[in-house]
Length: 349
Image (cartoon, rainbow, N blue to C red):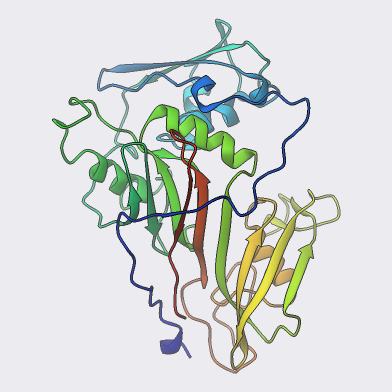
């Protein structure tokens, strides 16, 4: 069955988007301040100087957020580890005072960050082949392969999606950028084991706008998965709270004290000992799709963390070494024009 489950992506149409109206527009929120894209504060664009400075003014939508969480959404070219280190080293000021990572922000707060030079990070370009399915001067959408990290970690500094993006975006520094380095804005993430579509911001303003859209759930995300066993129902709503327990492994899982979490599941095809499904994450908890499928009794094939991993499945075959979870559809409002853009990358497992 391993050979039969080989990843065979459907032919992509590079640099072509499918522009449609949002099929499920989010309802308006009464009495809630709605900023337009033009009103979002754009962070100061980094330069190649030894010390880059970024200044932000906190709006209503970001009031109450932790400063480290806020900066992670604004400085998408930096990993959370790097941001935490900048704060702990005293390079982040809130209203002129050195901030701590858990500092809660208020409307009107001024946040300043200094980004000194350091050892090689995600900004080190590498000629890693990228599958680009859409690109313009503001954003690009790529297909991340399974097994690739999005950001470097303490132990892995090369071979990540971020390294490849820096190379791709800066192949011609004498072009429209005027020689300034373009830093990829990582708007959202996928697990190392998960493949699929990711949107990347090419400008600070695009990063700011898209980050807000993702937080407000103004985007469309669909996944394809091959799960163990035969699911009888055509559709299911999986509702099970997800939380973190530091004393058990895996740390994240279904628990009574967890946060409300919901996933919609739709059966596409039933196979011998497996079911091909479409998954829609209504909420966005850590490892939500993998946890919910396992909770349902049908773990995703190849999931060594929440499922049988390489053990035998219902059909007596062993699991593939890859996780059969793929982000196949992504829809979002363009951060500059507001136009609804929807892209698709299907797989044939």
